[in-house]
Length: 103
Image 1 (cartoon, rainbow, N blue to C red):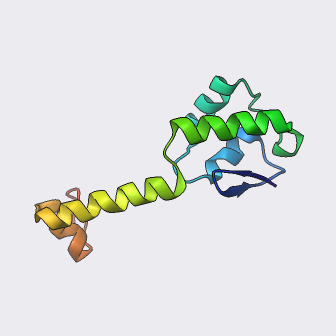
Image 2 (tube, rainbow, N blue to C red):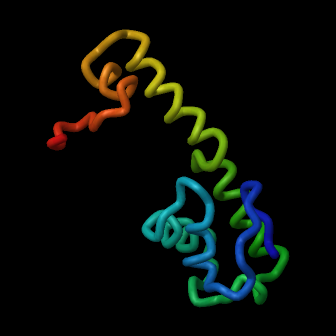
Image 3 (spheres, rainbow, N blue to C red):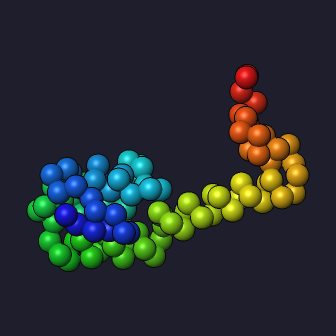
């Protein structure tokens, strides 16, 4: 298994899909990363060269917030809302819908 951003990505899947196993990367972001690095999206992870894997690692590490950093930022944003006592913060604290959904 290739390890990118602290996540073991599956060897049998196409690179375009395998990158989505990383928290914070969806299909559109995955396509953008592959276009920037010049890696063919139809390549299977097991067929990637070490050079291509390294390109992907560097691109993700330098230009995207993923995994722990992203999770920390999201939780800090929610905590900030709760601390300032705004409506959205109260809804988060009570475990209720925040964006106007019916209950």
